[in-house]
Length: 157
Image 1 (cartoon, helix red, strand yellow):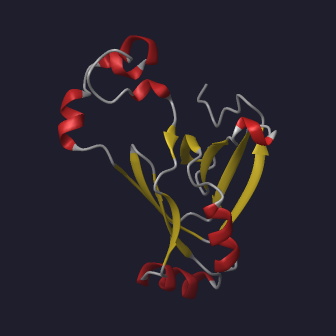
Image 2 (tube, rainbow, N blue to C red):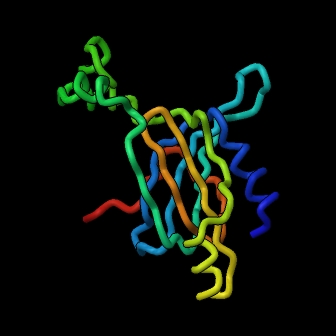
């Protein structure tokens, strides 16, 4: 995948909302589902897009929430918006993360170059930052598709 095209696609996610991220049920690819919402005055309807990071060799997720805030956010009532709305702490129950500062293509790492040489396809490093998580992915290709409202990624039986 061309780096300039990849950067353009990632830039489109800025300031929208991540509603899900994780490996797919077949465990090769990593998906990030983003709620894309425009200013209501534009007339553009909100949509949900699935960003499928194909051939994802590595995914690392860490908190972006400060330790001081974590200390205030251990109460299980905070995992539900209704019961956590009036409490101090991070309300996990909003069930989305603003894509801010956003997603960016990083310079190729030694690991990306090594996997490119091994498999004969290009690999890319991306950093996705929200107010709750920092996600770094090492992958080869990105596919973007619209998914219906209520799209549910793999749910275990």
